[in-house]
Length: 391
Image (tube, rainbow, N blue to C red; front, side, top):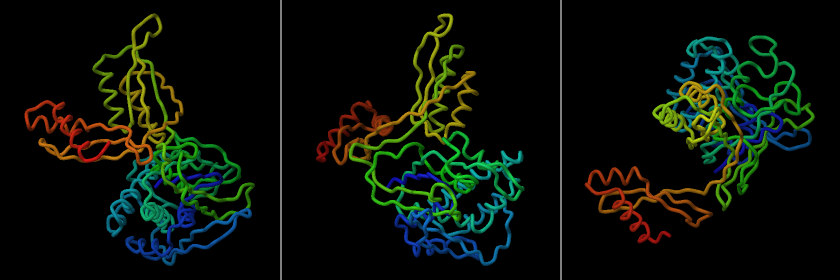
């Protein structure tokens, strides 16, 4: 299931949960799952509301006994580790809190271990983040894509006083992401909302090609803007033609590095999460031979990818452009051969296989253990796949 987070007016943790509830998440199932959180003194509720004449759902965390507001990252990690939440929920929640801690550390100029969570360390914010991660799991959402993020304008009152919008932590959280002021004044995106999207979304851009199954609207507390204060989450499955997503292509001209460094840089880019990386021969200024080093990555990985360009290949500038990508649906079939099990990567249009290829790592390992060539293993695996009725 794909979730497209359309923050056309605002983005906050409670709005994220509310949109999932409006899209079909059962409140009772969420309440039951939250019982596994090693945190006491809260209850969650939801109600149907209207914002600017549009119907939506508002999510509430009722705090009954807040005991310790200023928590460190280690305190929250301990809460998650002591909980009986699923591994997936715990992993995602930790990723969100770690991203928040990194942003706070940058904003305050201190080590991440010394960061004091103020508003985000309170019970209601912890519940918002964990509830969002639970909702994603209960709705079987495996991919998140997001729209550009509205930040708002003016000022906001927070634990450190009156701050310009976006607040410092939010500004650090959205670095490398597409943002805009948005239609409403005030704070449109909270640190909690920004952390959820920037930590968990795989890509950012327009609504992807998909078959829509559900749509939910999560309401914020304000109801005074030019645009209804709602967050929309669209749920669906990939279209029959495959999946579409938005990526960033980064590239740099390099004419003063060795082949070894260039190869090591490509490996570093791939190890850092790029979906592809390559080098193209080119003729540079003064007729010097050189290379155009390029890569394709999710927008949220851009800061780390830039660091690799600047740190490893000595370039003084990196070009970036947004690109759209269409890809076939994929599945892995495992076949048994006389050399052992081999996985076959299958490309699909709808339910129809249109391409298939052996995983070379499986073939190479089987070939080494049986003292044959990888090609022999490939032929055996493809034969077994076809004999199994696959085409």
